[in-house]
Amino acid sequence: MSTYAIIETGGQQLRVEPGRFYNIRHFASLTSSELEQNTKILIYRVLMIRREFNVDIGYPWLKGAAVKGRILHPYLEEKITIYKMISKKKMRRKLGHRQKSTRFVVDSIFFNGEEIYE
Image 1 (cartoon, rainbow, N blue to C red):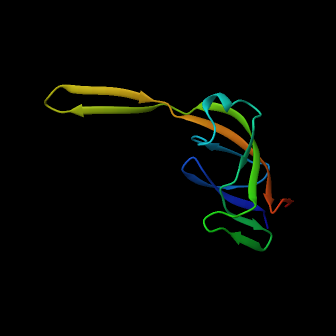
Image 2 (image 1 turned 180 degrees about the vertical axis):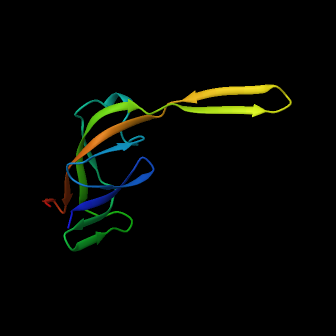
């Protein structure tokens, strides 16, 4: 059985495991100048932790739970093309947009001050 946590960040809920990396749209608590490589982060919005056969569920978040990680690098996602056209009026508009994202890796999951191992 694997150890994992469900966290809330950037308007999304993610299932995270130690040692894996994830892409997130934005960290609400960090500004763009703080999103540099190897910046350590702590996420306290932990909704659930599963370790072996035990499941701890928060209401809405678990008290004393944290996910510790670090930012690998910020990057821009693929360009999204928005094309608007009104037929018979000769109106055409083409716009593009690239969303800023951040890739981070989860180092460990803490619950009540102790690290949870697999």
